[in-house]
Amino acid sequence: MHYVYVGRNEWVALVVGLITGTLYTWLNLPIPAPNVAGGIFAILFTYIGYLIVGAFRRTVAFGAPPSER
Image (cartoon, rainbow, N blue to C red; front, side, top):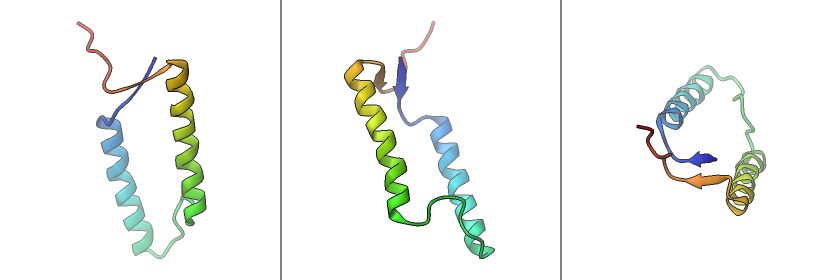
C-alpha cells in the first residue's frame, strides 16, 4: 500500500525547488525543468493518473500511514 500525504520529504522538496528556481533565475540559467505549461501539466497529470488508477485498484491510500507501535 502506498500512502499519499504531505510529509517531511514534500516540504524539503518544496524548499529545494524554490531555492533552485531562485538561484537559476538569479544566475540567468535555464531552469532544470520544463519551462512551458504543457510540460509541467504532462508531469502533473501523469502523477494524477497514477493516483486515480492506484485508488481504483486500492493500492494507494490518501493520508498518513498508520503509526507502527
